[in-house]
Length: 262
Image 1 (spheres, rainbow, N blue to C red):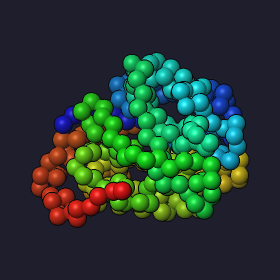
Image 2 (image 1 turned 90 degrees about the vertical axis):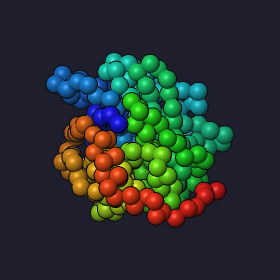
Image 3 (image 1 turned 60 degrees about the vertical axis):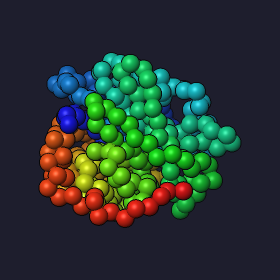
Image 4 (image 1 turned 30 degrees about the vertical axis):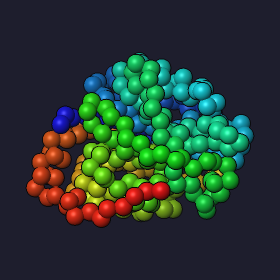
């Protein structure tokens, strides 16, 4: 197995203001890449360009690609890395919460959020994703998840088909302890690295977010964590040979229950 260098961006998303968010991110990334290089994967929070506004018809990208996807492609090409973040995309009479993965050559993969937040009536405006997805970068297999997906361990069960789990979110500060705890649990139970990327600041509904962007190893230990309530890009290089060695010595996955998702 190889290594993967990951940069995760924690920032204050400006409500329904794509151009301001793009400009601000470009400034953050310019400063970051002036002193850093060799990033393989650049991660942005859920609904990185608008904030988590699901009930307005004007907050959605066309299904064949819109402003946010064009911007992601520009950044991927500029910094020669995979750039990933979620966007609300029109589908049928609703929209999907689409987690785009954009490669430097312009190719695109995506995962649509599976679990919809009933407490916030997300299901009234957003269609449920139907497919679990594995994305491969430099030979490393990655499971993408979006926010509320984190609460559902059956969906994220490692079938020995991924090495890294990535969850991007707008996870409220009021439930921050759950975010911190479940990220560690998912890492330990699935014997994988886990990256969680969350926003900071209050959104247009006055919901506060404190961050908690972090990288966790396969034993549940934090490798690096962003400072709470602070805009920051954290970086780490993950060594997947260490993961393989750990799993050779502790093969808990051999005793996992068999099941089938429907």
